[in-house]
Length: 344
Image 1 (cartoon, rainbow, N blue to C red):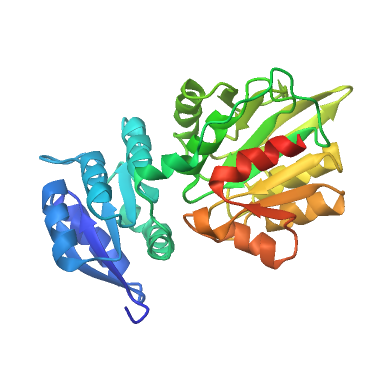
Image 2: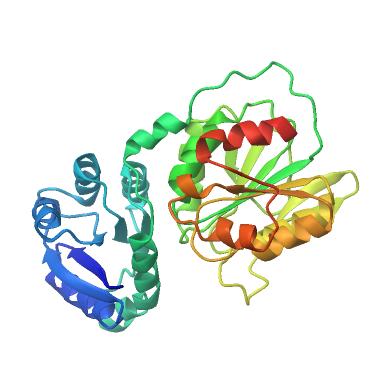
C-alpha cells in the first residue's frame, strides 16, 4: 500500500462525490480510487477495487447507507466512514454505527463548496484513522457475554467511574454499558466524541437496552449512583461538589481544547472532587485526549484502566496513556466490565 490510503467515495449526489474526491485527493496520503452512486454499486466496487476505506452517504436510492454497511460487513469487513447531513438522520447514523461503520463526519446542510471544504481536514483525518483501524463485523457482540450480578454490590475503593472514548466508541459503549447492573453503587460519567445533535438520541437508545439508567448529562444535575451520564456534544462535562452532594456542570470553556467535550477536562474535574476515589477508563479512539486527565487522576492517587489494543477499533487514546506510564491495567472490551465491578 506504500503508505497511501485508497478510498472509495459513495454518494448519490454527483456534486458531493466530486467535492469529497477533491478534498481527499489534496491530501498526499490519500488516493480516491473510485466513486459509487448507491450501495449496490458500492458493493460491486469494493470487491473490484479493494479500497482501504469507504466514505458513504446514508440517504441513497436502491440500497441506502445502512443497508450497504450491513451487507458489506457481512461479506468482508472494511473500514467505513459515514458522511451524512445531521438533520433527520440521527437514527440512521446510529444504525450504521451499530452495523459496523467505524466513524462519521457531519456533512453541512448547505452544500456550498466553501461549507463542504470546511470538513475536509476532519474527513481526511478520520479516513486515515479508519485505514489503521480494526474493523469488526457485528459478531463482536459475542464479546459482551452475560454476567450475573449479586442483589447487593458493596461499595469498593471508588466513588465514581469516568470513561473517555472516541472512534469506535458508540459501538463499544453499547457492549459495555448494558452489562452494568442497575444497583451499581457509584455514578458513571462518559465523554464520547460525537458531533452536536447525536448524544441525546444515543443516550436514549443506550438507556433502552440497559438495566442501569443512562441519560445525557444536564447542567447542575445531582450525580447519583446507578446512573450513566453522557456528556452532550459541544459542551464540557465536569463535576462540582456543593456540601455533601456532587453535581454535573456543563460549559463551553475551556475553549482551547481539541475536543468539546474533552476527556481531559472531565478526568481533571473528577480527580479534584473525588481525589483517590476515582477510576478513570480510557477506551478506543484516535489521538491522545485523556492522557493529561489520566495524569491528574494518578497524581491524586486514583486508578486508570485502558482498553487493550486487541479490542480497540483505534488504539490511539489508550496507547497514549499506556506509553506515558499511566495505565494500571489493560482489559479487552469483553472483560472491562468485570474489571470495573471488581473495584467499585
